[in-house]
Length: 137
Image 1 (cartoon, rainbow, N blue to C red):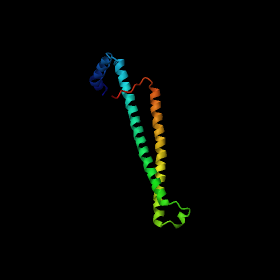
Image 2 (image 1 turned 90 degrees about the horizontal axis):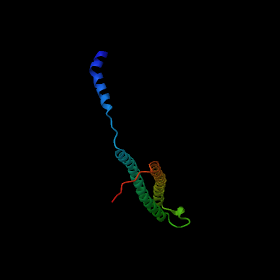
Image 3 (image 1 turned 45 degrees about the horizontal axis):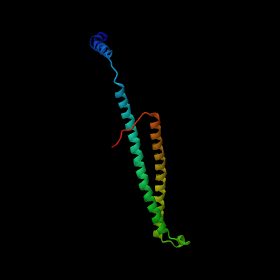
Image 4 (image 1 turned 135 degrees about the vertical axis):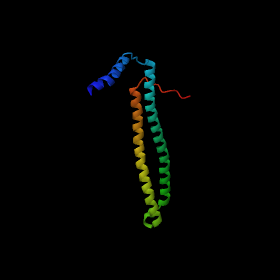
């Protein structure tokens, strides 16, 4: 078995090792461009996530404000409104309360995510101070 290995695989291995001695490094410009591309793709992903979260937050804010306005209309403005409220209005108030709670919970989650994405962007840029994003024309 060992002799078979030495006759078939070993010569190929040693020829490859000799070829590796002709190794040449890439140019510094090419290495810098590769590094820029890597950092650029990371920053682009962070920017996309940040933009999507901000858009979701904006739309959610509008929807929550709309639900709050509709809930205020069904609530009425009398001091004893809750005593004489129709069962249908109470049911709608419960639905609005659930929607408002879910919307406010999601707004908090989005605010935290946006803060984290901004931190990631700042941290990435601080770790790669020589990075210059490509110009968009």
